[in-house]
Length: 283
Ligand code: DAK
Picture 1 (cartoon, protein in one colour):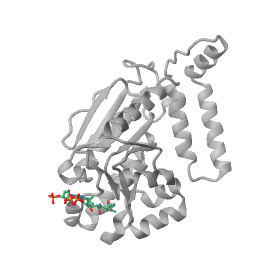
Picture 2: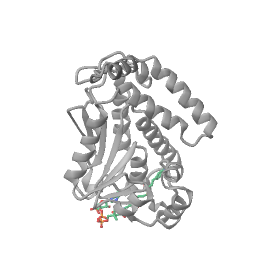
Picture 3: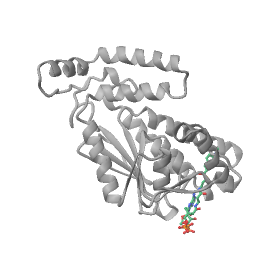
Picture 4: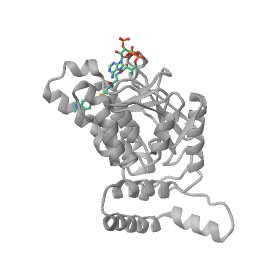
């Protein structure tokens, strides 16, 4: 899978796992306009997985390294060992006019939506600070793993700002309304264990190495499943989030129907009946 070259990101692909590292350690990986632009380009490439952009159920390749699913999951992390992402780039923001600020916010909204649309799981691996836009970027991943060093927070009110990259929407969905209000109004930072207790983080690891290894292992585990079914599950969950139950169930029913049209479903059910391991074609 060809991602191209980047100034502010490092990308490495190995065994179906793409690791996307925000690489501006001198600014604690703050989200400059360049980072946002490059994240958008990466998401564009990742959204081609399955062969059909945003419609994974009808992908035409086969699973595995040389098919339509050369990447089965994405790790999103930050370089330098001190921060995942310390937020929007505050220095860059001070020279923006209102029009540029709106463009910046809309570009970042587009990145978070594009990340959610990526048809394979995205795991944010937070080692160090995930503040403001950094916490919001992590919230756009499917779920978050953290190291003991991780710290989360929405410090916007310290700067006279409000969460601008989706925090007022996604944080309450993850931790509940009351806790999201408290975190946003107080700008309080929480450590990895508190984030774990609140449901913001799925798992906590002692070191960065263990964190990244565990995320890769989870992706490899998911890679044994039907690619189209994982992609459709992700789409269904995202579309149903925040909707009334009946609407969510309608989305689920339509997604279930789409799964019935896949070769993966035919192979998975046949393999069960024949008592053998499924060999999913990925379409
Ligand atoms: N932006 C730019 N540079 C940053 C930065 C940031 N967010 N965070 C850190 N840096 C830089 C520091 O300036 C410093 O650079 P030098 O002075 O060495 O050149 C270097 O990274 C190391 O940082 P520190 O020296 O401060 O390191 P410490 O260990 O002492 O402190 C810290 C680490 C994370 C506690 C501290 O750096 C910090 O408080 N950083 C800021 C955290 C923060 O408030 N983040 C921003 C949240 S607000 C918008 C939509 C969304 C947003 C904005 C607008 N629109 C609608 C337009 C989002 C806003 C946010 O994300």
